[in-house]
Image (cartoon, rainbow, N blue to C red; front, top):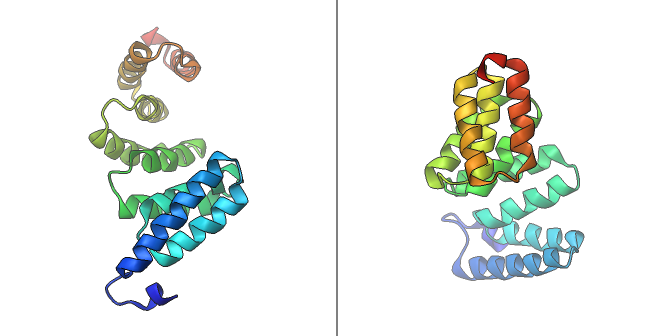
Length: 171
């Protein structure tokens, strides 16, 4: 509670305690004890509200528990705190894409790719955004790139099938 009242953010002791709580949560997640891990992540974010990694892991647990709104908030907070957190951006974009919202997904993915241009899943999802926006040639280029990087990835073949279904001139 002391950290919440600090004007300039948490003190050094709170930050260290937050890191310790985060590390405990990681260990518990590896043991698949998500309830206990979530409690430690709650404490980590209470002690240091700027602990982006804790917000990201909270989002992963919330996603696993089908708490989409809470997970979305956690991923957004992680990205606000750490704009370079590629995985949080990809998770956030995946929620937007699952809802058919390529307009909100695409900026998250483009930002993720600025930090990690070779991120296969982000590239695949950009192709999905392009396909949903009718930018078929760009989608094909992106999917072709993904196939070159990981041809065993089933999702890229599914996405190519959808692309050819809706833009047969590309086949």
